[in-house]
Image (tube, rainbow over all chains, first blue to last red):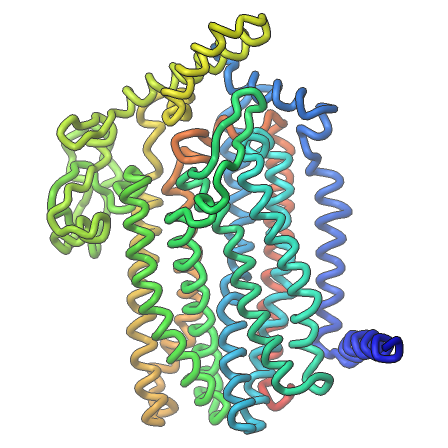
Length: 75
Length: 509
């Protein structure tokens, strides 16, 4: 049983390992994906896209109050 | 900071930019996964290695498109939290559940079956590989389902209840949200449009090989599969488009009126097959909305209500209302909306003061007028009308191109079956030229869906002005240009890598 599970994990590992090492165009694509994800998450998200309600208010009750105030501010 | 029109416009422009760029990548993935699954099925059935080569070639182009498009939709999630925080809070559970399911589904599908599909050719059995390819096709399409359920809810909010204490919509009936007729028709129309685009893509690139007189057998095989798939899915696209228009007529009549440039409603209303709008036309004046037009009588009544004699309200009827047809005017809706907003405000204050009896009365008033709440935020009745020219031209571009695609599939299927395609240079050039038209139709479709429903973020309940966050418009402008550069770079990368692979051809794979 144990040998069977080990064999399964080995097969899955080699599926990915061989797949990545034998890639041609894939290497360029992976570099592109890595750069894109880095730009999106490490630069764009971090610098420009704070979650406004999460950052400005500590609790959901405060967030609710703020939104209710926004919805009814002209009354 | 205060909401300004400038801030809202930049936030909308940024969302439109990111959504439109994202949508350059998604439909090809939705359709090409099915085309490669069909090709691989033929390979497994026949054992012919040439079909394996054909499958692997198109799978390579699918990989490029998938990799470059990957995570471009995440940016819209960022924007929800930053630019549209009011909206994100108010939609609450309605968006959370479908998007969470989508995220989990996409993650598991992409990390397992995609890997088997791309890396597993010599590692797993033929049948296991084929199953993985089909699961990628089905999974990527189901992934789109959840996004479109959320979008369908925005266009026709059902299965939810607004909680006046938390200012959030809470899901009361998941199945009502899931089987929302607007969401179902939108999902089917959207995925079938992806199948059509992928078919055009395969036919166009194959036509290029035929023009270059290389890989001709590979090109013929590809054209036969893509033309058959494109023809069947085009016919399906027509039926789903019909249902989408029917849902728009029932739930978003102003959008339908804008899509057709219909100002004065009528029975047996016609569809403008071709027309040019008069830019001088304004609501309430006597000018003809068209400089010239060619109309198909009764077609709009039939499309919208499945009845040739049905009355289709125009922009003027919706603005002024009609007792005869049970239509409330926009000023009446605004009045009810203002009552809803005032009642919500009173409920909040009375509850804080501990006056629960009066708070309960205010809540009842709110609930009675809640369906028109969004109108309470409009400054003037004209604000309830979307951009007519944008909606009209986008809709007619989409429909016109869709008709052309159907004809093209018939012709390419016929000539590929009679083995004459390679001799028809005019057809090969047309097929190549139609690839960008497929993308134009895709984008036009989204413009109709999203610009046509303005001013609503949530139909009738929340206008975009109230949905936006109070942030500096300069930061939105900066990120708009940042994204414009980033996405343009990605698009250039995609086109360059694709063209390189196309030039290498199937022999090089």
